[in-house]
Length: 166
Image (cartoon, rainbow, N blue to C red; front, side):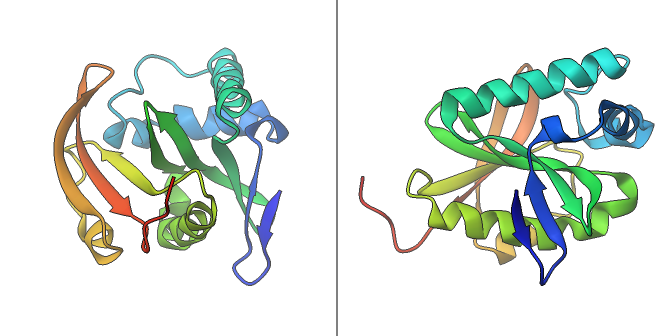
C-alpha cells in the first residue's frame, strides 16, 4: 500500500476491497454520466471480472489501477494503465468523493514522475466533461479527439520535465 499520512490518501490493490463496495460504487447511476464505456448492469460478477482484469494488467505491466482510500475508507479507483506505448491515467471516484480528485491526482502524478517507465501520461476524457481547466493548470496539453473502444474521447498529454532518457 502506498500511503501519505499528510493527506489521508492511500493506494492499495483492488483485490483488497470488498466486491460489495465496488459493486455499489460502479452501479450508482451517476457513474455512467461520464463513463461511456460503462454500459449494462453492474453486479458482483462484473466487479469480480473487473478486479481480475485490473490485476492482470499489474502482472503484465508491473503497474495498474489501484483502489483509493481516504482515511482508510474506499473512495474509488484509478491509476495508470498501459495503452499501447503510453501510460494513461484514470480516476473514478464515488460521487460523494468527487472533491478529492485534485489531491489524489497530485499524489498519483508524484508517483508517475518518480517512475522511470513513465516519461509522460495521457488522460482520456469523455466529451461530456466540460470542466477541463485543471488539466491545463497542471501542464497537460490537448492532443485531439480519439476513438477508444468505439467511443470518442478527448485526449490530453502531460510530459514530465526534465525529459528522461530511455
